[in-house]
Amino acid sequence: MKLCVYCASSRQIDKAFFDATESLAHIFADKNIAVVFGGGSVGLMGKLADVMLERNGQIQGIMPQFMKDVEWAHPQVEDFIFTETMHERKAKLLEGVDGLVALPGGSGTLEELFEAITLKRLGQFTKPIIILNVNGYYNPLKDMLDKCIKENFMHPRNADIWRFVDTPEAVIPAIEDSPEWSSDAINFALN
Image 1 (cartoon, one colour):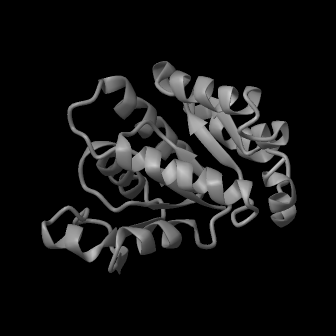
Image 2 (spheres, rainbow, N blue to C red):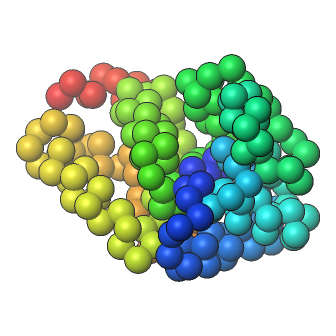
């Protein structure tokens, strides 16, 4: 299994987010799950990579060249793809993965997550999207997505696009229990 992980680069966040990331990385390494991530060396990205590497897990970074040029790339990650733009990076992050996991993050994480949700809504990405809601961080997002459906901005079937989980241990079961998603989802995207 290969999973894309979206997560924060901030160093200033609560320790609980680092602890959850560490636990998730342990699970991935122990289950021999390959990880592709944004390639950063700090914040949750750095923690994810550090733990995967410590446990001999497989991890690949994908980062635009301009970020590498300011030395944001994790120096111990050997498997790296450098892109020209952020747009190319996002596309590469989703190539060939079996699902994606969003840990807490800021505008970059949210932007990546919303693009993936939109791509899935249009049938362009069909894999599970799991949102790790550490300490209720994503409760406002869950409420907003529910409101989108309630107010008919999205079809009720779109609620199957994502799964919210509260603990790292629930991520893999949520992936396994996610309903299949078809590339013909575009046919009800406008309903």
